[in-house]
Image (cartoon, rainbow, N blue to C red; front, side, top):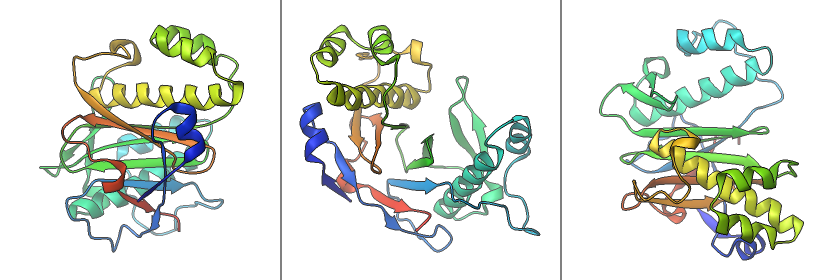
Length: 242
């Protein structure tokens, strides 16, 4: 479900809906071959319950062991994603076998056929998108000033977009930068490539992208095949933590 956010939409010159996330528990939620966007927030206390069987893979646990910071956060988010994906496919969370593409894009190798999914996190917010059919890419960013913003824009964006940013007021410029950045990231992730493998205006793979606001102070984007990606009004937007 979505409602229009007039201020940001006016700044960007395009619709950027504020999404309304409905409380949902993946254990009891029954999907119907739908496009879903889940909001997952890292709680103040996220200790794994003592005595419960581990549902993360050995690969995920080994990676978590290398982290100097945010180890508990990483495992909490991975466990949450597994619970949601398992419920979506009606299998045990630990049975979801996740592989990674050449550039690190995750995909479900078993069971098959499987939905496409992508996740992104920024600040204390994580989003998980699940598509029943088309390849998708997802990015979310916390909107905050960034000293290198314009330098990044000049390096990564089309010159016309950079010129547009330079003509904006600073508050508009910050929001617009993250809008364009999340679009670039989402399209790159949908293609399963690296940032320098995909030109911002590439027409090699026709794509549709939708910008949206998942929470106050954040902006996100989902990109996918132009004739298969539903609009935000058709998404099921679900909140794991409510």
